Image (cartoon, rainbow, N blue to C red; front, side):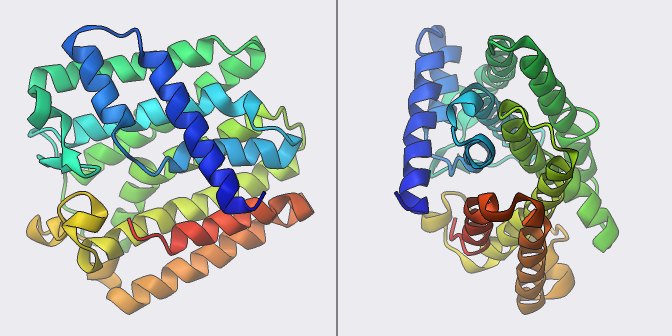
Length: 286
């Protein structure tokens, strides 16, 4: 099985798992949860969790619940991010954003419910020590010292590279890093050198992920991207492209990707899938 076939297997597993664990959620809020959760998405974070786990211990299954949990938290954040009080976006993943489909109140509750569901899954991990560790990883990455802090910073106008990196490191990067660390935790890794290498790898690809987002906002189309392009320019937001220019932003993303792969030397041959995926994220088109 090649790496792309493995990714396809992960995607099928994650999509089936997301549907299974929300199938009993009733009412309009339950419907809105599934609408936002199942309706497309690249599944980057669960893929990283599953791939990291399998690379370390030869099996992705221990990371299944953490992978579903982080995708639920990610989806909740997108629902809230699209609300009129935040970015006020009408489309997400090629369809109407949750609040445009169901109204602001239902969208708010759907996001809240997805966040709660994520921690319910982590609490059901059979090894309670691993489950508790996963709760700590995800809560720190998504809360006031991570994603929420980044979102707060993003509401203000960034002026320079330092402030832009601070926003992206928290709003986007920490959840990417959490995905890798969740996979590492699920694999029960005890080697601190490997953990450090994985964190450095994840920190770098998290920044790359945002740089590519900024590039696609000026080079892609609404149809391919699944959401309106040019929104950063329209909202007068600083991005890697506005600070560096398009070509230098691409060069910076390439440098960071190479650096991310170089960080994995301690994993030896186990690093191959993660290196391949880092380069896939660099050249993604949506």
